[in-house]
Structure formats: C-alpha cells, structure tokens
Amino acid sequence: MKVLVIGGGAREHALCRSLSLDSDVNALYCAPGNAGIAEVAELRPVDQLDGEAVARLATELHADLVVVGPEAPLVAGVADAVRAAGIPVFGPSGEAAQLEGSKAFAKDVMAAAGVPTARSYVCTTPEEVDEALDAFGAPYVVKDDGLAAGKGVVVTDDREAARAHALGCDRVVIEEFLDGPEVSLFAITDGVTVLPLQPAQDFKRALDGDAGPNTGGMGAYSPLPWADPKLVDEVMASVLQPTVDELRHRGTPFSGLLYAGLAITSRGTRVIEFNARFGDPETQVVLARLRTPLASVLLGAANGTLDSLPPLSWREDAAVTVVIASHNYPETPRTGDPITGLAEVAAQDAPHAYVLHAGTRAEGDAVVSAGGRVLSVTATGSDLAEARDRAYKAVARIGLDGSQYRTDIAAKAAESR
Ligand code: AMP
Ligand code: GLY
Image 1 (cartoon, rainbow, N blue to C red):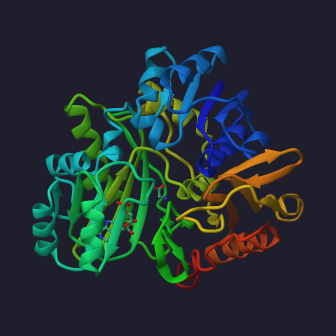
Image 2 (cartoon, rainbow, N blue to C red):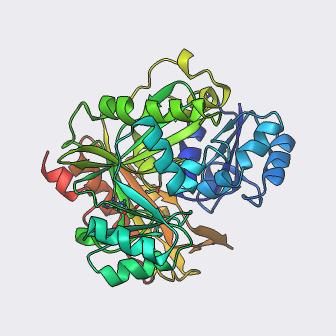
C-alpha cells in the first residue's frame, strides 16, 4: 500500500514511523514533513491547506491512503477534496471537523448526544460575558470559539484577565471549571464502528508543576496506572459512541480520529474538549504501545470496514515523551538554532528511546529548529519509571540553545506505581 501523510510535526513523525514499520506499506510519503520524517518517508512540498493541491499530489503518487494529521487542513476541508478525487482518506470532512473547529458546535453536539461536559454559555457581547463570568465565578474558563492551537483557552482566578481574553474573541465559550486529572482518550472510527485506543495524559502547561501558560503539550505518558480500569469502557459508552452516532444522524458522519479530552472530576468524567485528529504529543506514546500494524486500521476507518478488523493489540510496555521547545515558546518562539546530539541518541539509546521531530528543518548537513515545539523525545520501558529514565537520558544528549523542557513528565504517575 502507498500512503501519503499530510503534516510535519512530531505527531506526523510518530505516524510515519509506525507506518514505515508496517509490512503492508511499500511506499510512504509525507508532505511537507520535516528533517526527521525525511529519514522514514519521502518528503513532498505542498500547501497543506489547499485541498486541490493535496488531492493532486495524492493522485500523482497513486496513493492508496491519505492520512491528514493536523486540524487546520481538516477544518479547511482537505479530506473532502481527497475523497472527491476517489482516494481513501483518514480524517473527517470539514463539516465533521467542526467538532474541533468550533467549541460552540461541539457543545451543541454533546448536548444533543447527552455527553457529560462542563456547563457553558456562548457569548458574543460584553454583557453576556459579564453575566457568564458571574454565573460561574472563579476559577474562570474562557475559550475562543475557533481554532487556536491549544492557546485560545484562559483559565484564571483573575476576573479582569478572563474578561479581557473574552472581549478579544469574536465569539467565546465561558464555562464551569472542571477539577480533577485530565485524560486524553483517542478512538479510531469509520463513522459507525468506534475503536478506542489506550488512554494517555498530556502536560499542557509550559513549566514544571503545571505552572506557566497553556501550550500545545509539553509531554505525555501511557498507560495511566492511577486510572480506573473501567475508564475506557465508560467513556466509550458515555462519550465516544454517542458522539459518533449523533454526527452520523445529523448527516455529517465523522470518520478518522476522535480525540476526547476528559477531566476526571469528583462528579464523574466530563469532556473538556474534542479534537478531530490525533493529539500531539499523546500520539507519540500511544503509537509506541500499539502492536497492531497501523495502516490496515487507518484504511479500515477510511473505507468504512472497521467492524471486520480483529481487536487492537497492545504492548505491555509503558511509554513517555518529553517535548523540547524553543527559547520563548509559547509566546514568540525563536527558530533557526542548530540542534546537536541527534546522532548520539540514535547510536546509544535506540531502540528504547528515539527522537521524533516537530519543528525542524535540514540546513545543509545540520538540523535547525523551525517551530515552537522542536523535538519529542520518546522512550519505552517495562514501566513508567524506566521509560521516563530512558527519555530523560536521551533528552540530556540533545543540545539546542535557549531550549526548555519540563523535568516532571510522568513523574507522579511513575512514583504511584
Ligand atoms: P482546551 O483547548 O479546551 O483543551 O483547553 C486547554 C486546557 O485548558 C485543558 O487541557 C485544560 O487544562 C484547561 N481547561 C479547559 N477547559 C477547562 C475547564 N472547563 N475546567 C478546567 N480546566 C479547563
Ligand atoms: N495535546 C493536545 C492536543 O493535541 O491538542
């Protein structure tokens, strides 16, 4: 099978790595990719947001499957254009991707499907904003309605800061604060059948101890030793299947990856957000643990034949990923800094630890930073403590001027073992 992956982050590197290890895949392309993905896939330049261009490229390459990684092309309808060209595509239609593209749409779907989530108001005027802030009280949760790469959400005790963020958005969702640990649970679906993956936990804040601003995600681990073993079944029944059913009944079936961001509160599990694609960095740890070859599963979702696949098989291993970010991420990340130590990790830490590239590009023989999140250093081990150890050993070999990473990824979970 010939597979084309659209995107160029660490998530796409993880997807390409798994696909490159799958004996069903005899040609693997990534557009536009990055310096690390170039080691496992052939790179092609493309404007990711241009559906016609992506469809043309897929046709030229005789792709049997296109996998759209990031949310922006999905919301822009890139999967629709590829599907219209008669090529199977893993990723929802632009309409179904509104589940991520509009927080207000997601809330409407959840209300109709009876999915537990935070109570919320959609506000468009300062008066509505004030009313909603007062109705819920502190801590205030204020979310830009549109796509914001994980940075459109402000959670604060400061009413003025909450109000200022709200007034800076055209349309804003203000909601009840959900207390409790967060879990990311992904499901692969063809619009009818839903296959849950293993849960992971992401670290959204920039600094150790969950301090600092929200980011796209600074690290992740899986499995979750502290979670209720019934969690996946419960979320399947209360969240994932009802959401997929609701979207199908509306005439906008969702196929691809449904990402449920959950809060485990004292009053039960609640959805914080949906995403319409694999999460980054959680994908790095979830795929590290998946034993089933990936291509047939993604193709089954694209073709509507997931019900005929055998159940997914998982490794006993634990996995941890640590994100190395640029100087000044997430505010104004500096790019163009040389990265060192990649060859040392490959020589000394493989196969248990490896580096997945996010924002990198080749400059002659050198690899330089090209984005906010630069690398996602991933490791497996017999338990979280071993995986964590191996990940941080590899992180220590990497040089990137001014870079930052969290030192506490999976630390608490590894201790509670
Ligand atoms: P989102 O983009 O909706 O995932 O929000 C980003 C982050 O903000 C989440 O991962 C949470 O850490 C936090 N957050 C969002 N909504 C809530 C909420 N209702 N209560 C508490 N924290 C929240
Ligand atoms: N890790 C959070 C996200 O992918 O949105």
